Image (cartoon, rainbow, N blue to C red):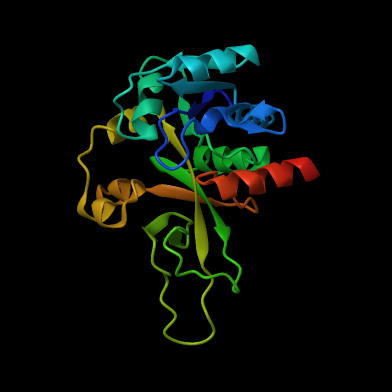
Length: 243
């Protein structure tokens, strides 16, 4: 499948509600978006990387460290819609939607995802990790995924699925919010109407499942530390300072 061009797109904007100006916040001497871009560059199966942003300040910062940035419409409701705007005018076959607030993203995890997806017939793919038994699976901020025997997703939930009616406790898997699509499927996804379970759980990927799509899940050791609060930012600064 390596005849196909694979493009990583990093959506980023300044108007984050919980942590304004997040992509440009300094982490060990570099803006956050630069950390994400540099780690993505180390992925062996990504042919190119683009930052998609409505903000000239982010585009200018990206140009300063050599990244390609595309200015997009400001009114997109989600990062997926922003990525799709880039996909609509590019020549890539495979699109990877990479969160702009993951400065510790593992390049190996991106390669695991691309490899698993391109070997499948799914319309969409994503990553999952095993949740340690001592961790609180009831935390609604930790999205869980349940899969079929072929590692395609059956359901995503903020609840601790599967329910442990008997002993021992079942294995549970957490979801990593990185997505991969074939270009045509990404464009089709953004045209789908929002669905009841998507709205109930506030999880965009449920729109795909409710519409009958297959989502291939790749198991990874990577555990994300997304930056949504000042405390998250300090955790990431400490992790990168110690690296």
